[in-house]
Length: 468
Image (cartoon, rainbow, N blue to C red):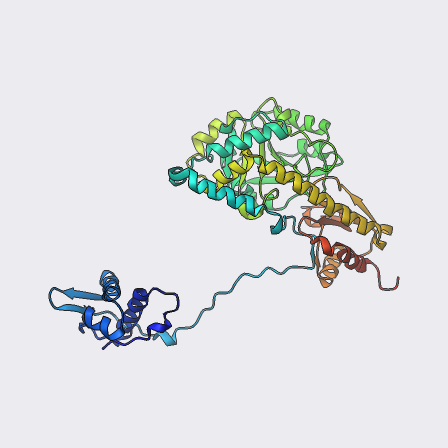
């Protein structure tokens, strides 16, 4: 008679546990091929369980082919190939949880702390979407994203960025990297892209991955050098004029006009405007976009919710000029939208009902307070004697130029010994990095408020010996 300790099943349903026990005995050879199993009534009485429990277990075993039934005769074990290794001999592979070390102060990571995400509002809206959207959540998402989100983004760009955008021009994607890949497909690998030196290195890594041609163009005091650009063979440029990362520079209107003129000189020239981080400006009005200055359809506008909300949301978007929108629809629209409709409907509601605007205003105050605490701590430290702060009035980072003989590698290594992670401006240079040595990129979005004063003391110790 089959006997099993059913108390060991834990949270597993009773019929499922019985099914597993019988299956294991068949595979191990404890129940021989063609051996008859006890009747449902007999096994139920023996194990002190209900007949329906045994019936469900037998039904699952029969469905999967471990047993078979003969009418009016009962159930029998099938003939299966015995495994060469017993269950007890199999190596135990323990699942390891990914662990991300948390520094005492992380000035390298340029992301919001999870505690600042509006979880209560977001979960409320998710429940509302689940109860109201019904069948629409199950439908295939249009290639450019759900209309409600594209319409909400278009209205937001009109109200807060001064852009005249049709919802049809908005393309939703799972992260900026995905949208870059679509642009490369759209414009073709024969295009040559120009990226800023200094700049975000991940961009050229994406271009390399897709086999796109690119070259770096130096920056001057106004942004991407017009002279170097004209000397290059590039016909598409990637810039972040409202708030350049990592220098924090704002491109003046004259240079914007010069770059737009450059784009208008040939039919195949375009400007990719990355408006990342533009929401967080602490002095004056938001900087107008190049898209709003463009009258010739030369600017492709890109932005993401990774910084304003949270990176794991993975929702970004781009706005295409009408002429290349037609090309996109004809050549690239067969790619499916990579963001679930559930998240898109939730974000659309978050924007259209004013939660996004209130969240941005709250975070601007939070980041401004973070910045002020950091600047005050630096001012009251010995760093003020050897360092100067640059571009601190926007975004969530600033530059700290330190007069030191330490190399950037030594600074980073000494900082880690103080349990501080920080990057240097030279890390964002594709070439010619010597003239920016000793410039720290201080990201403060994820730094604990209560640790700021101590963090600056630790940073101070990198450049000053104790007692000096």
